[in-house]
Amino acid sequence: MPLVEVTLIEGRTKEQKVALMRALTDAVESTVGAPRESIRVVLREVPPENWAVGGVPRG
Figure 1 (tube, rainbow, N blue to C red):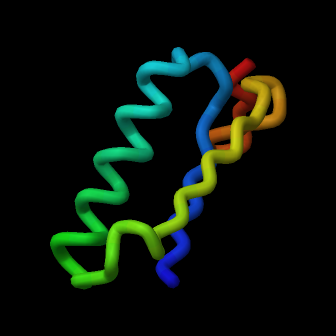
Figure 2 (cartoon, rainbow, N blue to C red):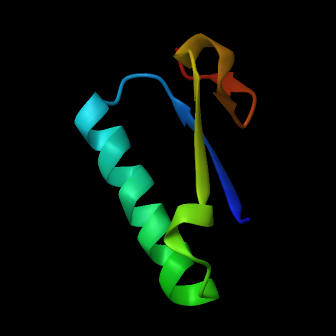
Figure 3 (cartoon, rainbow, N blue to C red):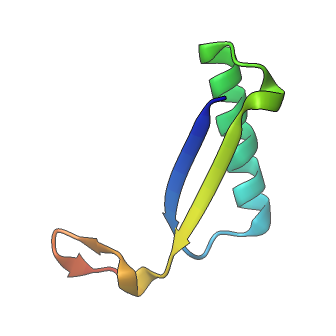
């Protein structure tokens, strides 16, 4: 059972997240050959103020 975990800054629409989950599922299915029904995708959303790049907070 492949498990794909993605961490994102909050702010994407439900439609964008669904599209991402579908695209990731498609990619795993086509590259690894896993049955679609066995693929799991987890999106974790982080508030911008809890995200930093190079020590500089994004929020």
